[in-house]
Length: 130
Picture 1 (cartoon, rainbow, N blue to C red):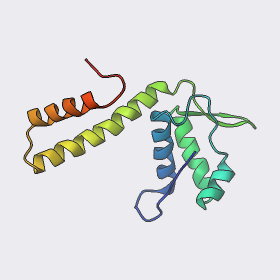
Picture 2: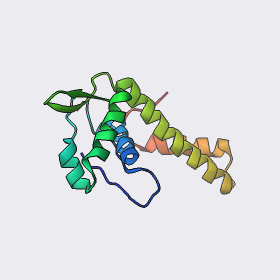
Picture 3: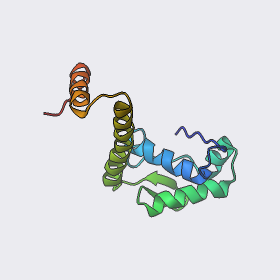
């Protein structure tokens, strides 16, 4: 599990951990049932207080994204898929908002942007939407 924190970006470190774990689950890089890095190990890797990581893991547990198993560790919840989908949509919504704002600044109208999206989608491998 790769987590990177930035102590100077104004977002509390525990929230940076929470957001990155949510992204890893939403993107499929962390699968249901997969164990998260132990609290002390992650704290050592990030050079932060273990309480910071523990707080992040508690937030994730309250959100239903992870489950704690006594003496066994913290695991991605088997029931986390609806949250994972919601997180994927949240990530895409933020990117769509940024794309719309940029297209407006560049003077590209919505129909032209949609045409460009369809054109680019046709060039990418994988399943497409009808």
